[in-house]
Length: 507
Image (cartoon, rainbow, N blue to C red):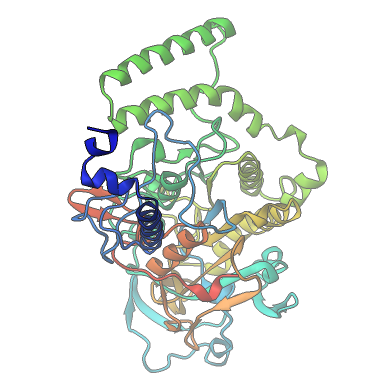
C-alpha cells in the first residue's frame, strides 16, 4: 500500500490544490463575517464575554474587559476609537441654580414678583412664593454671544469652549439620591460610580498612581459620601482613592524609626507573601484587587508626594488659579484644582473634583443648596469655585491636554424659577437643570436642548441622566449598553436599561 492509499478520502481531498484554495477562501469569508457580527454585538458568545443567556437588555453580548487579577490597573483598549482618553469630572453638590448661571430666561424679569397660572403651590421644602428674576445680570459672552450671568465671570470668558446641556432632568429631588443618580446611575446606594466603570473598562496609563482619584471639597465629603466614587459590586481595585492637596492618603509616609532600606525589604517580603497567597486562591478577584491595592500603596509612597508638591508651580500659575488673595476656602479649592491638573498630567484616568460638601445639611453654606439667602450663599460658593475652575480648564487647554481630556461640570438638579415662601431662596428643581462638557470629542460653543420660558421644565430635546451618562461613556470610547458586570443574576450597567447617546453634541 502506497502513502496516498493510507490516507482517508477526507485527507486525500485536503491534498487537492483546488479544494484547498476553495476551502481557504470560504474560511476567510467566514472570519470576515464573524468580525462584522462581533463589531455589531450579534455573536451569541464572544471570547471573554458572557454566555448566550447573559445578554444585555438590548439583546447584545456584553463586552468584558480582559483583566489580569494580578495587574487590574493595566491599560486596556476602548470599544472604539474616540479622542478622550482621560476624564475630569467637576461635581458641585447641592444643586446649582441654572437660571442664575447659564440658562438665560428673560421672561423671569418680566414676571418678577408674580405667580402665573400653572406654578405649583408646594414643592420639595414647602409652599412656594412668586417668580423671581435672576439675582445676577446676564450678558452675552465670547464669540458665540452665549448669555451667562455675572455670578461666574471667569467661566463666562470660556463659553466658546463649552458644550451646554440645558434640558437635563432627573428622577429625584433629594440630594443623596440625586448625587447617587448622577454619579452611579441609580438613586439607591451600592452601585459603581462612573469613575469605577471607566477604570474597570480601560485601566490606566500610570501604574504608580491610582487609576481613579477623588478630590473632595476642603470642607469634607458630599451628602452621599464615598458612594459618589465607590466601586459598588465591581472588584475592589476600581474604587476611587480620595485625597486632597491638604490631606494626602493616610499612612503614606514612612515612620522616622524605619529606615528606607528596612522599608524596601519589608515591601519585597510582602510582595512574595502576597504572590504565594494568590497562587493558593487563583481567580479570586477581590483578593487580587486587595493585593494590587497594597502594592499600589507602596508605589504611592514616592509618586504621591511628588505629584502633590506644588513648589514647582510658577507664581503666574498660582495667581491665575487664585491660590492667594481670596477666601481661605478658595485657596484650598484652588490647590485641589492644581492637584487635579497634575494628576491628569501623570496619566491618571479619572479625576473627580468636588466643589461643595454636606457635613450638616449644607443650606448654602457648605454647598450650593440655597434654600435661603441665595444671593449671599450662591455668591459665596461662586467665589470659591469660579476662578480656580476656569483656570484649571484654561490650563488644560494651554497645555494641549483638552485634546485627550473630557471635562464634565455637573450638579444633581436645578432650582425653581420662583422663590420659596421665605422669599429669599429657591427650592429643588428635578425637571430642568444645566451641566456642561468641554474638551475631547465635544462641540465647542454649543448648546443642546432648552427648558421652558421659566426654566421650570425641560422642553426641547429633554435629556435624562441616563442619556448624559451614556454620552460620557461614548466620549470615552465605551458602549454603554455593552459595558456590563454580571451581578446577582443581572447584567448591570451604568445606564441600567435606559439611555441614548446624544449624538448632536459630538464633534
